[in-house]
Image (cartoon, rainbow, N blue to C red):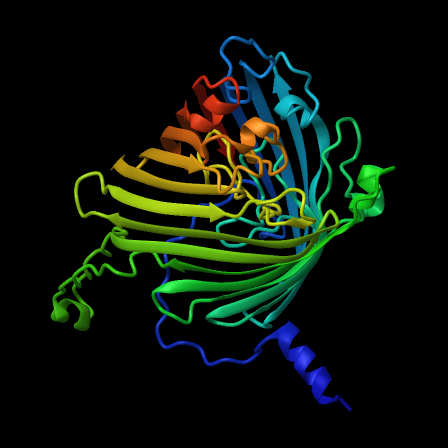
Length: 489
């Protein structure tokens, strides 16, 4: 005899077996066949090839008098090959390999050394098993090496600009309903290691015994018709004593609590309804009018996010805060221009000798291009107002210009680069007495998508050195340019 539990599980996996046939069947236009899909979609391959040429000048030392190894140009190449197996509608098995290379640079091609992207020959980027069929059952489970990305990825993301990207060795459980979902996960980040299998140090892959565990709960709902609303809680534990032996400094063990809202595209602009001939639709003899083109996404848009942190970081009591707010308007004009303004703030430590830390911890973000395309800042110890202008002269081309201003929240803490760890200048008496204005950045970006599978991007950025750099040493302006091509199937 089946129990109610057996009946529930059977219903979730098998779904509804009997249903009344519809009175009228309307066939939608067939989607283009995927040339890399076989056996009725049970086996599907995906391929990505990305090549980027970069040139940088004074990006790291702001000093034209010194020809450093980072004042150079180089080529970055990334190749990915993945395969998805779907033996059943509720079961997915995915594996993806990645090969990343850096060519023609003066610096050594070791990941992270002198800001190098470096080389990482064919390695496992993703490999997971997923059990889910949300049309039949609200529960889903995903186990293995995978991408974790939440919200606008200010705290947790795949960092796709980086030539390696970021994945997590994780267990993730999801519950999904019509207008809301919640996920819980526990994870650790694999460490990119040249010449070796990229293994997370929870399993001593890099032999530093950090035993990192990053876990959390993330809730998202569209119950409010004009926006997406998210609430989250993250926890990070690291055995940081092991990293700084023989000097014990204490472990890292803190929580991040936050909320985010983001307007739905076009929520505050409504196109007038199309007028059709009622007879043509009713008598069944006249061909109905062609479908109307997709409406433009016009009008007001907004987004905001706040986060609070408490606990321990490297043995220090942590209390930190960060906030973001953005507002934009897309005009019903030629080229569909959008004008946007935003402000980003993150706390810094006001006293490095008091046994406490107020430096916001940026966790595992996709910082490019949140705070400028030159990646000079992370969401730490900063004030950052910005203005942007975007236009679409034709369907395949997008133009964008951004202007950022940067101040340190406190000059008792350092200026953190996009990696969240590297300081632009050491915390010296000069830095403590310096002006807090770090500088301004002007970014230009052009994207062109001539084909569905091909994307082309070109960008140029200029950093205007501010008084903080002038008060602490070399203070020359910096430049960055790149051209990138991406082919994806």
